[in-house]
Amino acid sequence: MIVAAVIQNVLLWDQSPPPREPELRALALLSMLMISATPFVQAQDPQQNSNATNAGKKGEWVIAPIPINSPAIGAGLAWVAGYVTPISKNDKVSPPSMFGAGGLFTNNGSRALAIGTKLYAKEDKYRLTLAGAHASINYDLFGIGKLSGDRGLSVPVKLKGAGFFTEPLFRVSKGVYFGARVQYRNLRLSIEDGVENNPPAEIADIVDATRDNLSRQKTVAVGPRFQWDTRDDKFYPRHGVLLDTGIDFFAKAIGSEFTYQYYKAAFNKYIGLGDHQVIAMRGMGCAAEGDQVPIYDLCLFGFQNDLRGYTAGRYQDRRMFATQGEYRFTIPKQGFVGRFGMVAFAGIGGVAPKFTEVGFSDILPAGGGGIRFRLTNKNPINFRIDYGVGKTGGTLIVGVAEAF
Image 1 (cartoon, helix red, strand yellow):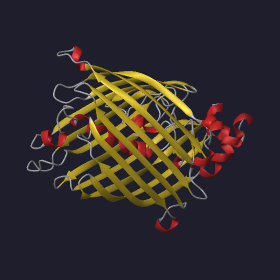
Image 2: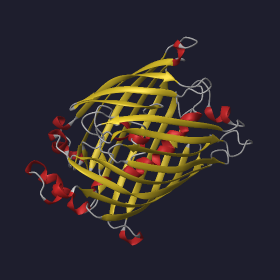
Image 3: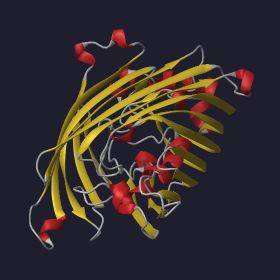
Image 4: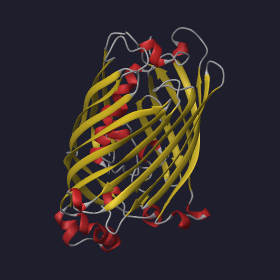
């Protein structure tokens, strides 16, 4: 799930300095490059409703090159190109639909490419997401569990393969959507020969825990999706909530190598304080259940900016939760100065084999701040620079649009 590194880490265009940032879920992250990045161009004035102001507008392009200099994947460039347009100019309710492509390349040999679309139709009664990706990502694997993350030792691995998913949603009442997701991935995880066959003693346990994943693996899943969405704007909300939940059932009966389940739920709430301030809050949790869960499908702490201040993937396990709050402020002035804004954020989270095993000493705190610069005149599209500090150090995150 990388399209913030090509995923909310490379797709959300995250650049996380030391420790290294594993781009686990490379394909899912890659797929999110279009889903997460191309919507940025169509965010409207935060005091206006995007559905109303976009109705009847001509489509517009967004092209965004993002330089990368990360210890995790090297130096290079991530990029995204997208087109945002309403499907029907007579539809004054649906948000604009999005078509895009993105990718990344770095000097450590990491490569990624993704294409996708997100469609809104029939006065937002139907929502359809389609995405496909191919990636070859070199990163560091820290092992499983909080103790492995605290230790900070890692194994260099490569995740290579391709995949796609589709997610149709149907509105059953105002703001309430039901649907399903189907996904297919064909991946291969590998370790350098010298490390795999004769690993140093201090990282032998990480190599041993990874051996069952060192082959080409096909994973196929179907599962339900539920959304409750009352946000006043899809891309720069000032009011409302977003509850997004889903279950992925991987099963041999539908062609998957393994049978397991992946559960995830996230809740965002937005409170506007006048014209220039917003309080944003987010809570999320995930669980991976089954006899054999691939290491790249464990819950991944630090992914999608949950929480900023930690390298994505340094902490991972079968259970995870993260909560955070953010204060957003834009300078109330006209002209160039009025393009700037500031944020402050803080939160806590944790990983464990079971939620009942998360103790007080296992809590991972994080906090930090950042600056914003508005890139466009008509649309409040912000360039984002955040610095977060966690238990193991700090990370710098550079990207476009807000963290959540």
